[in-house]
Length: 383
Image (cartoon, rainbow, N blue to C red; front, side):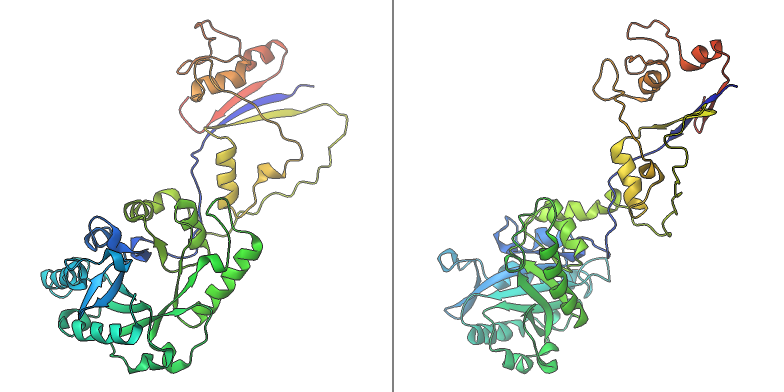
């Protein structure tokens, strides 16, 4: 009796997989404390942010932009840094924010001085900008030192408020609340590395789910700010991704589709092994060696993730590892990799069937032929 050795060479590509729960883009980014950047408003605007935050103080009958009272500068007014630029955008684009006629923008104004008086002054100022307050593409959202909740319905129709994710509101008040925010640190002590604990995730899921049930968007301030954190926040279905990193976050969102995969079909049903021959002593009939080109653990786990945590190769009871880096490089290419499989000898990159000095080496098909065994090679690529 003989056994056959079949070489099957498959070409595969690997990549990072991420199945996100909803559609994210730069339009779902919130520019936290936007005014501290070198170019307030315009940087976030040109990076397509959907929400921009500005802190204001009402001093000497003027509304000035700053984070602390000690930073106040008469030249940095709300009009100069935000309202005039917004007005310019609307006029330049015939009432739209830019050439994309679907774009909308949330301008969140955080009141740093006493709520009622500051908001009254702000409303008076906004009435000087009819293009803004009448635009269906701009939403003015008030945060910070807000006036008493009971007075929210008394303000003009163009004024909305930022609520608290844990508070309960009457229907009348809720109609004036466009977003629910929370201090991330009150729900999780996570530093942005690794993943959230199950307890923290459940707490966040609960408040986010409650907000969504009310039809309100969610934002967390004081949250970790970085790529891994943004992924976690997206998986939690947080609507506004709070960030201080305008360019980095915008680039991350713009290239998101290049680094993610969203399955559209049902998972592939894996074969269920019975392990009937495990431990049995019998003659081997056939040996099949499958070589996946460019396939290692990252690619296997990519396929495993894409198929929702199921892969035939992971159902094998016994597995091993083979290191096939080339003789002259830490990272191999296909030729020396296949040579290592077929001969047991490592060679240089761009070399096949020879040793590092270029001398031909015997390959398995030739060795097995001498023993009277039949072999075959199947490839999905060129041979």
